[in-house]
Amino acid sequence: MKESFFENINIQESTLPERTAQQISRLIVERRLTSEDRLPSEFELAELLHVGRGTIREGVKLLVARNVLEIRRGKGTYIASNPGEIPDPLGFAYCSDPFQLALDLAEVRGQLEPWIARMAAEHAAKEDLNRLRESCLVVEQDILNGWNHSEHDVQFHVAVAKCTQNLVVPKLIPIITYAVTLFVSLTESRLKTETVMGHRELVNAIENHDGDRAEKVMTQHIEYNRALLEEIIANLKNEDTKEGSLQEKREMI
Amino acid sequence: MKESFFENINIQESTLPERTAQQISRLIVERRLTSEDRLPSEFELAELLHVGRGTIREGVKLLVARNVLEIRRGKGTYIASNPGEIPDPLGFAYCSDPFQLALDLAEVRGQLEPWIARMAAEHAAKEDLNRLRESCLVVEQDILNGWNHSEHDVQFHVAVAKCTQNLVVPKLIPIITYAVTLFVSLTESRLKTETVMGHRELVNAIENHDGDRAEKVMTQHIEYNRALLEEIIANLKNEDTKEGSLQEKREMI
Image 1 (tube, rainbow over the protein chains, first blue to last red):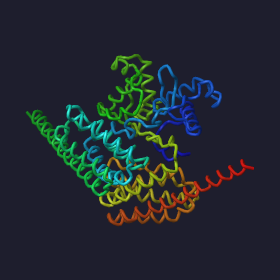
Image 2 (cartoon, rainbow over the protein chains, first blue to last red):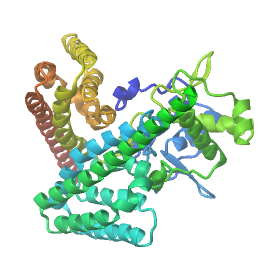
Image 3 (cartoon, chains in turn yellow, orange):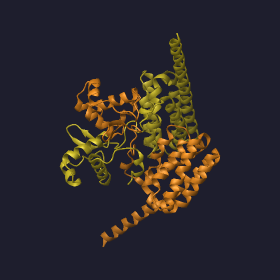
Image 4 (cartoon, each protein chain N blue to C red):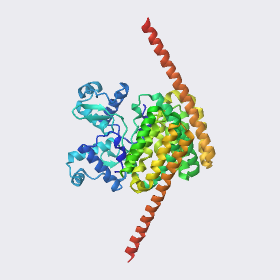
């Protein structure tokens, strides 16, 4: 029932393994099983759900594919630590226009992240601030060492979002920062200084519980990123066009 | 490379079927395959990826589980129509505190949807408006007939989001409206009039390309929903407490 409105997404739910997967998933929710908990045995599940052990095995495979369950080697099948969270949950990898996707993601970030920064400053607890400061340092170390900092950059923004105490916003960050990895190799070198300074200022504002300042710094940080992204995409499209016309010229000869 | 920063989500990527699934998924992106396209045959994929047909079959199963591929009966394996989009992609069903989740989702909606409404008014094209008007009617029909309108309600908000021309926001709506189905049976009766009037006013504002008005109407619509949700949750928690103390009293006797 909880998932009813998602049904317009065309998942094939009518197969027996699929229905079995749903029942196992319901069992996990009802029994409040966590990543500490081992899944009941195939034998027990087969008895409980009135299906064969082969069907249980297929249902379990589906839930492993969706990161609801995980197989720990030599230990058995457990509940995953973030059950149901998967990489690229909105299928951005299959988007036919990655340029437009990146710009549209930047637009959403521009709307959401300054608000998140304000909330972070207003609600951050002591543990949140420790994690945030540490996360800020990790990005700086990446940059000092000349390493790709995109993954840790996303984690820094997640750490900011966790300060809000809102359960949803930290989960939205990996989605709306998807574009960071799409174009990071192109933007990286020019963004390094801004990143270090922007992150430091943001941490200070949040530590001082200064909502106005946090919102302002985040707005600048996202806008700087966005402007650079727009410039890079314009250049890439320009090169495409030039190559296109070059191609046309060649064909005309 | 595109998915690198998602790796902190603990999906088990080291197995052969998982690596095969990733290679098939890369193939889909590179060849720009769409839902019109049939997946190349097991035989062809096995040749191409240098693995056995059994491994291909396991890899395909993983991608079916993640709604990247779909099996059309009597036709074969095709690319799904929204590849990679799955129901409940953030695993909200496994959240241990659904009350807090619902309130936090309402907070995110309050921040995002008024902005979406403004953008919708500013960028709606003619086809968008047709779809929006139709979607508005479908919800009203549900309500007139006494049917559960939660699924169509979400689709109405998706139709508003599609008016923005932003690729990302329509995909965020099913996530942030997740709570609609969690509590709809409780809120439904009291929300019906407000829903009909609110939706109609919103459609009018968007049709008139009046961004200020659209933002204002959406703010009221979301705030009304949120206040009602807060009231209902407070009552539910209250009942829980009463039952708890009743239980304690019984045990004391």
